[in-house]
Length: 169
Image 1 (cartoon, rainbow, N blue to C red):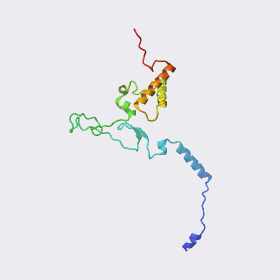
Image 2 (image 1 turned 90 degrees about the horizontal axis):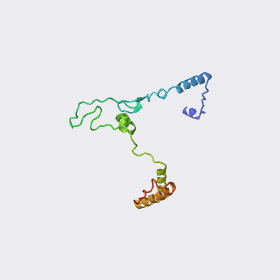
Image 3 (image 1 turned 120 degrees about the vertical axis):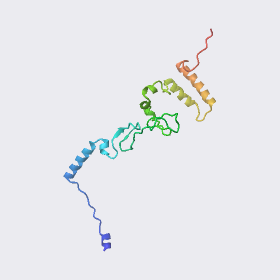
Image 4 (image 1 turned 90 degrees about the vertical axis):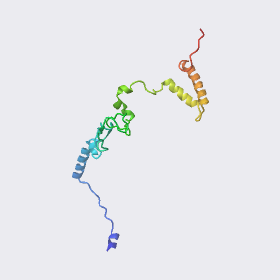
């Protein structure tokens, strides 16, 4: 009896969409596309600006709780003053992009630590790189720098590349 089912030809069923089914599918797709990202993916949740961990994350991603300091001083080291949410072991360090949020913009204002190179300095660096081999010593680097200083001094003038001339008084 089981042999009869094995030898029987396979019947392929083909789903033929109806007009009502197509209309219902189009209506549902239009409604879904009109939703926001969190509406289309309710399991992820909304984006929130968390006041406890000072980051933006999804509502369902993690649960951040407010932490209160238990006392004014840590009993293990009475010199350290406790701040809410911080212990000597778990002092949070904010990411670089949020330093202004934590410290305030006035504390980080001023000149950049490494400002971008200007046009001539960039040209200087590129010429030095072109003259120096892949592996070089300090002396080879100094020779290349001096050579490039002479090249750029001829091109743009003495200022900025060569030391000033000493005038006899």
